[in-house]
Image (cartoon, rainbow, N blue to C red; front, side, top):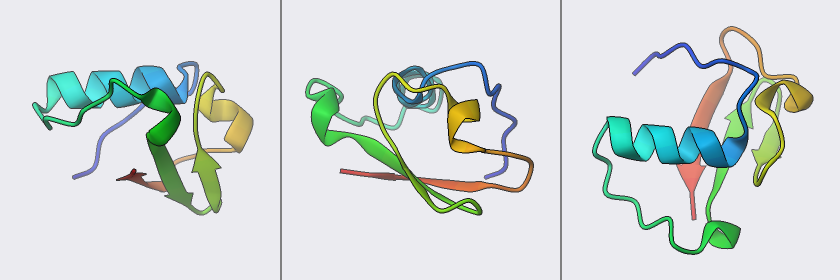
Length: 66
């Protein structure tokens, strides 16, 4: 699924928004165990860091991992 994501939000905000908006059913009670992985650029996205700080851009693939 391709979606446009603003770069001025944190990784945690993105996780909460996707979980709620797409009804994913992900247990986000322990955020220290939740993270996203990106390709191009390769990065481990976690916590209260803004997406733009990771160099995320058009065409970046982002996946959820626990």
